[in-house]
Amino acid sequence: MLRFLFHVFFPRNDKSGRAHWVAQRVSACALLPLYGWLLLSALPMAGKLHYNELLAWMGEPFNAVMIVLLIYFSMRHMALGMEVIIDDYIAHPTLNRIALLVMRWSTLLLALSVLTASAKIIFFPSFSL
Amino acid sequence: MAQLFLPANSRIKRGKHWALPTTSSAKRVRVKDFKVYRWNGVKGERPRLDRYKLDLNSCGPMVLDGLIAIKNKIDSTLTFRRSCREGVCGSCAMNIDGTNTLACTKPMASVRGSIKVYPLPHCSVIKDLVANLDGSYRQLATIEPWLQAATEVGKGKGKDKSKGMRERKQTPQARAALDGSYECILCFCCSTSCPSYWWNPDKYLGPAVLLQAYRWLMDSRDGAEQKRLRALADPFKLYRCHTIMNCTNACPKGLNPAKAIAEIKKMVAKKPKDTLQGYL
Ligand code: SF4
Ligand code: SF4
Ligand code: FES
Image (cartoon, rainbow over all chains, first blue to last red; front, side, top):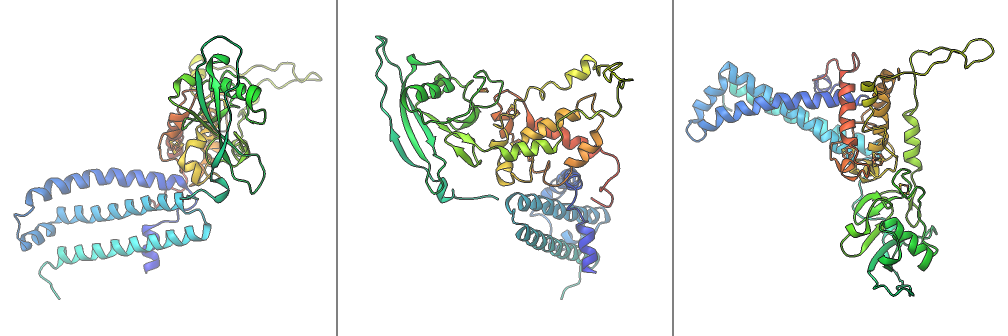
């Protein structure tokens, strides 16, 4: 299951610089309007909203979809950027593979935990442990 | 691989101070101070920085003229490459006053204070100012920098194979597409100024070679475009370029390898079918 998720998040891409380059640009272009939306809609609310109101705001379908997209593309863009840094600076083949693996798994786990947290807020706003 | 410190055998020690040669001319002397990297090619010995004083009235105006004057009048052991002395052969590329450039087109007057001369950065040194460029030349060969036409034009008939052969014509517009890349003299000032090339000189082709790759991609007579693009599309050969633009800054011929690399990336991205499926 995790392995499947891993490959959805990081398709086999070590052979083609082209796929990486295109993906980096696609995620960057997607992030521009997403962050624009976040700034425009979240900034005016800052400090004015109650906790419950914020949960309700996130539960609205459009906002929920936007937030999930934002998380996905942010994490993906971050991982693509980290990959560039690792390939630039870690030339040793084994160390390079280890660094890439650690970086990818931690990004995936980070993405999963943030998405789970969002899902909980979106679907069960009043649920607490 | 990125390194934070110079290896021990690259740390430079103080060198000799050479006196100003005496002149018989009555003209007032205009003294210029040179600091020149010296390494005699003996393993285990550290490089040193020698200081020379030169009368600018006694030689031509360019840094190369100064180096030649030093070799002729002060220290005949100083070693450097040069050939054309007018910026068309690319032999005299070195690091002068902190930038990679051609010694023969760099005026001494443009350098304030003493003129510091080093070999091209991040290369192994053969002797003094002569950098080892074997790896870069080998990379140039890998992009197959020659015309690979898709069709044969007027193949020779009968005994005389040249009979019936025709030249491959280009329209003025098609020829103009090569402007900005055919002028490259392969001095490697650009590649050796590129941080990406410093860290991965074995896998990243570097701006000089990529500009040549672009030159052949743009040639209307060449028919191997798809093959050339496919060969470039791996994660290292092309995509280590992060548009830092050091190459364009350094090019003594005023060319723009960074733009050529960006164009190649666009060409590769447009290439039909391949590994894009399932990738977002
Ligand atoms: S633009 Fe690319 S090739 Fe030029 S210096 Fe920067 S990384 Fe190197
Ligand atoms: S692009 Fe410029 S700096 Fe680079 S090799 Fe050609 S002439 Fe030299
Ligand atoms: S000597 Fe030919 S380019 Fe300088």
